Length: 378
Image 1 (cartoon, one colour):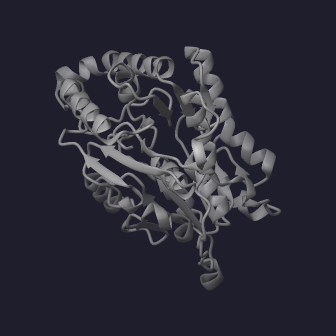
Image 2: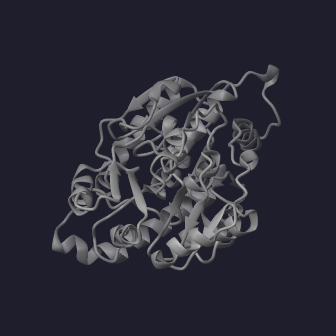
Image 3: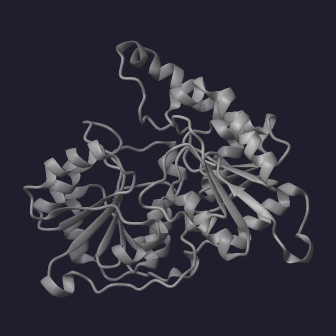
């Protein structure tokens, strides 16, 4: 379950189906245009607004609807996903079925569709921060188990909340056949970078990345942009600020199932942030593993934390301080280790976690009954 299906939840569901499980989905938003919903045995779209204020306002109605669906369908596990953590916090007291909560990001609550009134913004900081911390604590301590995106994130959650069953399930793609494409650079002799993720045009925000990409373009590097969270107003704003630069390329959204093939045509993949916080320090990004499977070395400006340590230890990319270092770092690089053998998610690992929280080591006869994955993105 999740307010809207994201790439991590989709990859987990795909890996589970490949392992023989039946997975259903519950979400609030309309279906995402870049996700393949055919993998789900059942898809339930609840008729409630997905923004933070509406979810708090409609809490009782939403929980009744979820409980009705879970009771009618006979799920073994309900797997909630954060963004925000509210469903992991709320559902254990409502359902008789074990709830497993998936913490993608530390203290997360998407700002989409928050009220724009001055009064709300005066309250926003303290109120939202309090809610995020409260929901994360409840989800970490009241659910049957917690999944995080890295060993570092698992330690962080254990230290902060003292949860019992906290597991690391890294942001890896499912194992499949990927038809990698020829590099664009083999045709034009130029260097092509790719960034796939969130971008904002708000000055000073965590994802205020266009100035960074413009600097790279000024140094003669092509930067290809994919907005992985579709928002038409943000897309239009990004398009307006990139359309006059021949080395900045804004692409249409790519279905998650075809993402690895799409990015394989580029020379380097960017994992880039304009700020550092606990969340960035301990979590892993989907692209850390997807770029390697695509045969694309990584360039990041993260100087510390799990992602930087992983890249440096494995030798699968470059760690730089800023955009002004990227061109020279590429020119002086001496090759990369892009062995993808440790880059795939195994659905059996998720099933083993479910078995642990259910208090059993295996299901009789190897048959796995229907499973609900998500919290409003199951």
